[in-house]
Amino acid sequence: MVHSDEFKELHAYYTTRLENPLKKMQSLIAIACKVLRVIYTMLTNGTVYDPKKLKADIKRPTKLKAVAA
Image 1 (cartoon, rainbow, N blue to C red):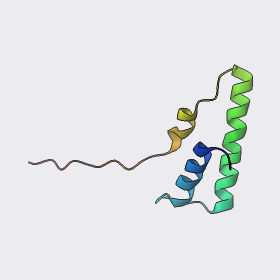
Image 2: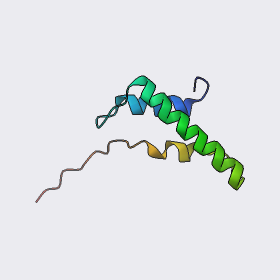
Image 3: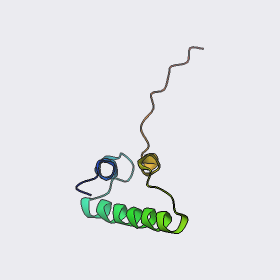
Image 4: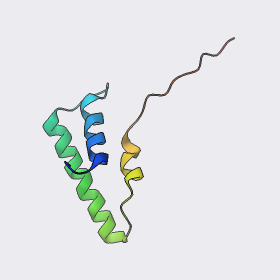
C-alpha cells in the first residue's frame, strides 16, 4: 500500500468517510481483501490492472443545485 497512490486514496476514504468510518487496521484489512480479489480476477480472467475500477468504490459527495419553484 505504501507505493500505490490508488490504495492510499482508498485508505484515506475508508478512514475519513462520514458513514461508518473504519479504524486504521480495519481499513488495511479491507484493502488487503480488495487486493486479493483484484489479483485473483487478473489471474483467472487474464485482465489488466485498471486503477479506475479500483477507485469506483469511492463515493464523492456531489453538490446539489438549488431548484427554484
